[in-house]
Image 1 (spheres, rainbow, N blue to C red):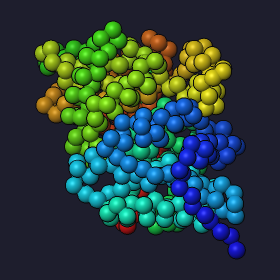
Image 2 (image 1 turned 120 degrees about the vertical axis):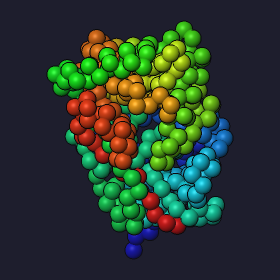
Image 3 (image 1 turned 45 degrees about the vertical axis):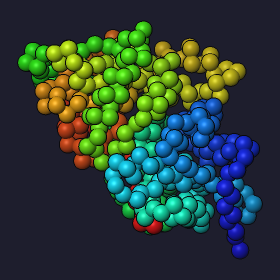
Image 4 (image 1 turned 90 degrees about the vertical axis):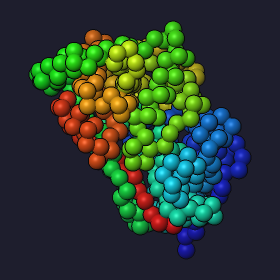
Length: 373
C-alpha cells in the first residue's frame, strides 16, 4: 500500500528542495522556463519579500513511498481579506507528478493550514498573490510562457478537478501582431482624435528620476485596478521591490505615462520577454547567466504588456487607444513585432474590447480555482 507523507519546510535545506523540485517535473518539457533560483529564494523569504508584512505562508513537501513527489504552500493575505471582506485563503507554488493521491494530500495540507487560521474558502494558485504569478494555465501549451506568467502541465487542472475545485474566474492572454494592427487605421484615428479632444500627451519613463516616477506608478496602479475582481492593493514596499527587480531589464521606450492637462492619468508597462533569455540560464545567474542576459537581448521577439491602466476619472477619454497605438509604434522601432497583453479578467469588458480592437486573439487561458473549506 502506498503512503504519502507531508513534511513542512522548516530549514534552508528543505527550502532548496522545495525550490528545485520543478526541475524534476519539467525535465522533459521544452516549453518550461526555469525561475532564477536566487529570485525564488527571495520570493519565498519571509524576511526579504514585503508581501509577508501583511501575509504569511507555510511550505509543504510530499513524499510518496519515500520519493519526493510534490510541493505546495498555504498562504494567507490579510490585505485581500481587508479589501474584499471575506475569509479566503490561498494555495500556491503547487507542483506535482500526475498522481491524484499525492495532489489530494498536498491540497489537504494547504486546506488544513488555512482552516486552522479561520478561513472558509481556498483559492489559487497564487504565487503568492494576485499581484504575482496568478492562475493555472489550462489552454495554450504551444509555446513557452511570457515574462512573469505561470506555466504548468495540462494534468494539473485534472488534479484540481479531482480534488473538487471549481472555477472561480478565468484570465485571458492575448497575442497581438504588429502586422495586423498596422492594417487597422481606426485605432490610429481614434488615438489622434483622443489626443486632441482630451489634451492627452504620452511620455516614456524618466529613468534618471526613477524614484519620483515610481510614485506616479503607485498612484495609478492602486486607483485604476481597485474595482477589479480579486484585486489586492500593493504596498509601497511591494511596488518598490518589483520595480527594483525589473529596473535592470526595463526598455524605457515602451514604459509610458499618459497625462491629461499635465496630470498623470494612466500608465502602461511593457517589458521585453526576457523568458527567452532566462530559459537558457536554467535558473542560474552565475557563472554564465550574465553572459546570456547581456548578449541575448537582441534575439527577443516578444514583448508583454503587463500593466495598462487609466484612473477612473480619466477613463472613456480614449487614453487606452492612445496607449495601444503608441506601444505599437514604439515596439516596432526596437524590432518587436509580437506582443502579449496579459492577464485580463474574462469579464473585464473594457480591457477585452481594447485587446480585440488591436486584433488580439486569446491564445492562452489561466484559471483561478475555489473550494469551500
